[in-house]
Image (cartoon, rainbow, N blue to C red; front, top):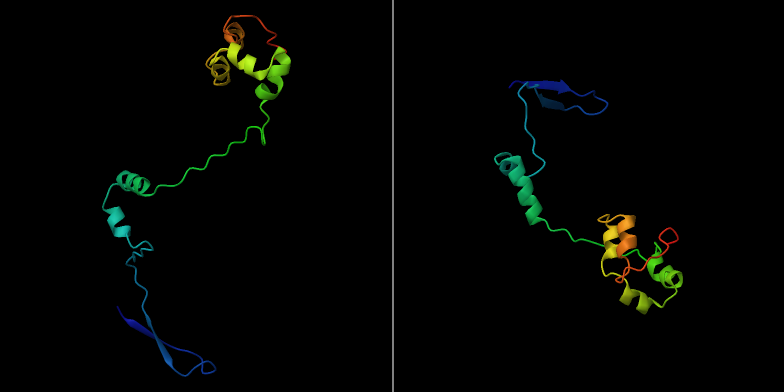
Length: 125
């Protein structure tokens, strides 16, 4: 590679600066010290290894009755005309959860909401 000499104007300096000639050969610059190791392995393998090595904490927020109001516990006893303890004892243990998850529809919820099968005003609820 040939060196190029350039003279800086005398107002700045009287020394010559030697510059390397432009090369058409591409230069590989790695900002990641482990770049060479990553490129020698399959991409998916390196990603899965990084995922297993790096365990991030999971943060869950319980927003019920703080940001979001749950009508079951606040309005349920008044709507059904019974104390909460009695309501819990006579309702089906999983019917409401199944309905909220979309596993059963409104008709099925109305049919099985109470253990004894008693009807209730589903539209009002």
